[in-house]
Image (cartoon, rainbow, N blue to C red):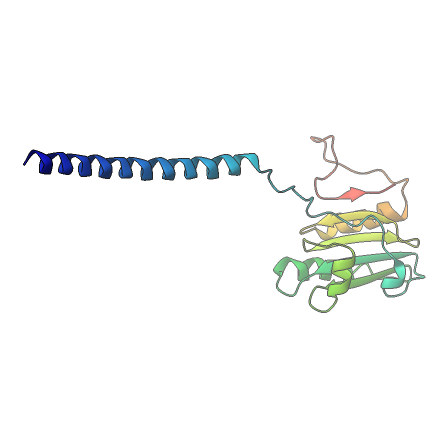
Length: 173
């Protein structure tokens, strides 16, 4: 009878040790996983929404025109059609306007790394982007940008309350 009690006590002790051992193994594995996650470096962030600084004018219509306005758009973007419509009004003897729609002209979107639409650029005869804008733009701002590009001596008009350029537009010199 004492032998049976000793065997039962030993069995209970072994079972307890196995449970404790299993818990220790789980805690060690969880700790290693957590440590490894903290140790690994985060993926590097990539700049997004950049406007091209240079265009190859041969990629677009009328490469000999003094100015080109390019709107990079997508058929699924509601704002894009509005920006393209406003840009189309700038067409003249000296200004060519071209819409580059994603599904139709994907190689150009890829070549110029366009990852946000609408993206609008105004480039000179050499393809240097003199103005770039991401997102919606007012017709007034677009006309002013075109005028400023064509005559860099024009002042950049600003509201009396602000001393800085518009956030979205940028002029290249």
